[in-house]
Amino acid sequence: MTAKRTGLKTYASHLREQSLKTLQVSSQIKSCEMLIYKIHHLFTVHLSSGEKITFLDTPGHAAFSAMRARGTYVTDIIILVVAAEDGVMQQTIESIEHAKNAGVPLVLAINKCDKPEADPERVKKELLAHDVVCEEFGGDVQAVNISALKGDNLTILAEATVALAEMLELKADYTGLVEGTIIESRKDKGKGPVTTAIIQRGTLRKGCVLVAGKTWAKVRFMFDENGKAVDAASPSIPVEIMGWKEVPSAGDEILEVESEQRAHEVVAWRTYVEQQEKMKKDGEVIEVKQKEHRMEYEKKQQNLAHLTWRQRKAALYKASKHLMLLKPKERAETDKNVLSIIIKGDVDGSVEAILNVLDSYDADDECKLDVVHFGMGDISETDLNLAETFNGVVYGFSVKANETIKKMAAKKGIKIKLHNIIYKLIEDLKDELSSRLPPSVVENTIGEASVLDIFSVTVGKSKVPVAGCRVQKGQLDKKMKFKLIRKGNVIWKGSLSSLKHHKDDVQVIKTGMDCGLSLDKHVEFNIGDEIICYEEKEIQQTTSWNPGF
Image 1 (cartoon, rainbow, N blue to C red):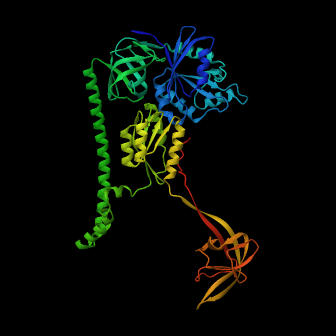
Image 2: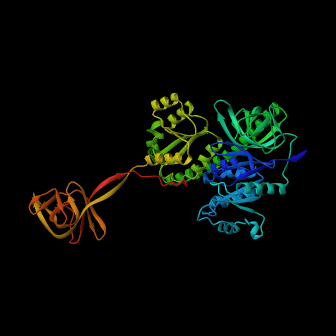
Image 3: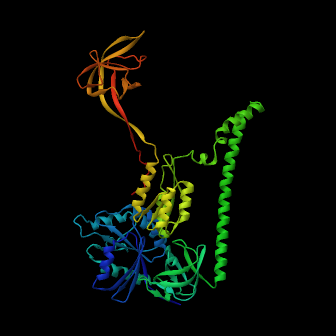
């Protein structure tokens, strides 16, 4: 049995919370309650006409690309939000591609039209290059000029969305086994594993047995977007589900099964299939490694072919001697430029977004970045044990570390970095990576002099070459370092043997003064050579990794 259902919309680029509040107080909209998480904004709007619209708002940053793609596949209509002064951006193009791939129609919302520099017509023309054709150009895409800040035309946007939904004749089967999609998942300290889901078929009730990914649930409690307990959830209405044995992943499909026994069978089968696929992939990797080792072995054998067996044994022993002398812990410490990290997040989507950013890491030649563990929930003793084992750092996003954990970390010398904003966490990680890099040495020029004359003096039984110089810039300081430049090439670097003004030994010669100086007794001068006085300073390097923030 099918019936008309609530339309489900995705913001391809999120409106700010101000726009949601504006919807709430609009005179033509009765109410708008929101279930707002750290990552997703999931809320239902009740129109005065009696229509209901469920909105799924995902972040616009590049790190959340996978999240936007998932949102596209569970929605009926995408509201493509483009800033009137910025025009089409990379995330706009990406969202259009998601819509095309999923076959989901668009409504165009041109935001920030209240600004003087706003140019909605330019936005519409730019979108033509990406096959988004507005109605005024003969296409079928509705375009609404809005201001999220001032609330201009938000009601018109809602009406345009409803009009498109009516054309699509959205219907759902309210009977039969439940099907749905997990929008977000997390581990709540009091509730255990919790998911926020959209039901797409059937009616979810307490006691239903569900399977998602490699875990299952017998629904114990359900909550609506206001946190109010409900006994049933129909298609297209957001619902929070409790009763999961483990935390499933965001994007997993929810399927209702007949019994707990059937749920166990499905999970066991999925686990088995995944293990088989992993074994196959591992086998392929092992085969490649074996082939590489075989080729390397044959190459070594060819290099040793001309030697006697005693000579071969001596050569092999010499090659491996330095490793034999190292203890296991010392071998691990031979690669010091490694940063091992543990990532903990509040919900599955948060962890996924951070890992997506880390996938862009491309500076292994400077410092290897090793994610030894990631998961959801507050910082635990297990996390500290892992950090201690790998000499790592624990990063937490929107999670906590209790006092016991903090004291334990301090005692073990383990860093715990907690953040509530993703780019702050990444900036902290960049600083940590930079701190692992060796300092770079830079030369700071103190003074420059030109060689005007050449002579020698007798010291003991040896003659030492002396350069008669004039300081052209800065000063020459005997305690600093010097280098001899000839035709742009560095001939010598080191310390002065002597520095004289007339016949007096001096420490410093300033601009415009003449002096005689000697370097190494084996260094010969040419008229026109340059003498550079400089100091060396160590400067901390910074990682070249650019995560796009």
